[in-house]
Image 1 (cartoon, protein in one colour):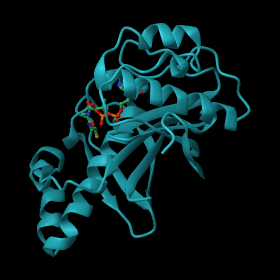
Image 2 (cartoon, rainbow, N blue to C red):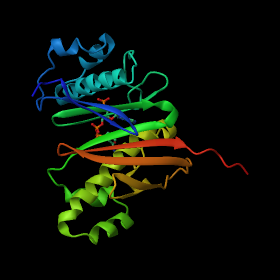
Image 3 (spheres, rainbow, N blue to C red):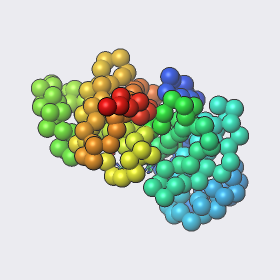
Image 4 (tube, rainbow, N blue to C red):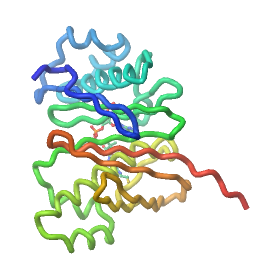
Length: 230
Ligand SMILES: CC(C)(COP(=O)(O)OP(=O)(O)OC[C@H]1O[C@@H](n2cnc3c(N)ncnc32)[C@H](O)[C@@H]1OP(=O)(O)O)[C@@H](O)C(=O)NCCC(=O)NCCS
């Protein structure tokens, strides 16, 4: 496996993405890799330690490569005060990382904000369900045969993390897992109903999921709905 090199590129109607191999190790990122970032990104990377540094660097390499797929030569892709990556004007984008892979997706910002999340199938963590699911989602899951429960939970969990990232620019606050109801379909999409506690919106929310090489990739696009007036 070529560390900090592209694992794959992917395209969907939500955007183009690039995945980069990262080491499952807290060792400092070598200077030869840091040099591939914009100097301002590398300066920030040097303030980070252990796995956090590895993930940030992998994510930024992925984000730069994804921007290049759009034909955009990115300026320094820094981080805003809520932790989200700052993209060039006109570009929406999002980053996620898991143990050995970092991924970034970018798209035209005219179609709304973008959130992306990567999850691994294993280990199964059935115990997260009460934290992540609404009571009605829990009822749906309870009706499933045991072997289908984890997939149903991780799909909802990941789509909600993607929702969080896409929603953040509009609401600028922590959004809890119970503020969205997610019903995945069998075609890589999901019906999403937001129940935002502060009543923000309305928004259109478009969610997608795909299994790529044993990992779940979810993405969400969010756009404010035009006000109906009155
Ligand atoms: C912020 C959060 C979604 C990040 O997810 P995670 O699984 O911990 O980590 P991931 O690797 O998937 O994502 C990390 C990336 O998220 C992005 N990110 C962090 N905060 C963000 C924010 N407020 N808005 C958008 N993107 C954000 C960053 O790009 C970060 O990577 P980077 O620092 O290297 O650039 C998660 O920590 C969290 O707080 N979740 C609870 C809230 C939630 O999901 N609610 C559901 C609402 S329906």
